[in-house]
Image 1: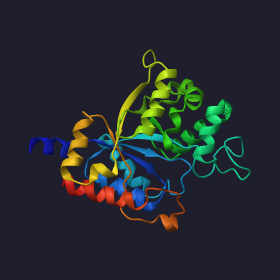
Image 2: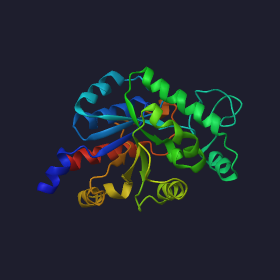
Image 3: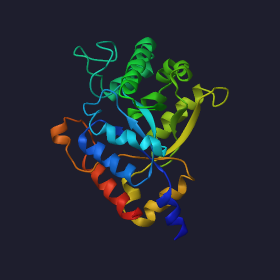
Length: 255
């Protein structure tokens, strides 16, 4: 009972993808209202960034923190047409970004410019950003991280997400790449270890609480949506209905 009560009362989740659709925003708000959110990751170039944002920002007074969900793989670049985009200004696919990273041909100045503009847009909406993470964890790619690292302190970034979840091998591998290339000590900002809530963790109550126990208090990343509006929002999203299923399961297990 006390194990359940401790999790129910704790701020344990980091919700990703604010701004991609009204349904996602509503799902994140649902978790914030219940007091379970530690932080929210906001997508600066997402089409629904301002949707219900005033409601979300009220939770800053209760300790809710905010991250730039740095995006180089979905939607349009805010810095215009460059080597990160196609001729229309749309970001290249995740696979093409990975290929460019592997070939060593990503442009550090363009990455830094995009970061500055994305961060400035969130700040223009009065979002108090102190954290950084990335859509598809792009911030952990060594050439991307190298382009951004020198900007963290000057721009108020205090915590940078990294993934340590052995059940999510792809993100764990990206973190390992980052570890090999960058020190963990000697900087004013800090890495924050995070875990990932997976479909298999939602199948049973025991599985859900078992996953929470494995985090040892580290944040657990979630992708909630209150309803599935992706067909009309224009979002390219492999999770889609899973987002709704995830939110309903979290509420069922913790209420």
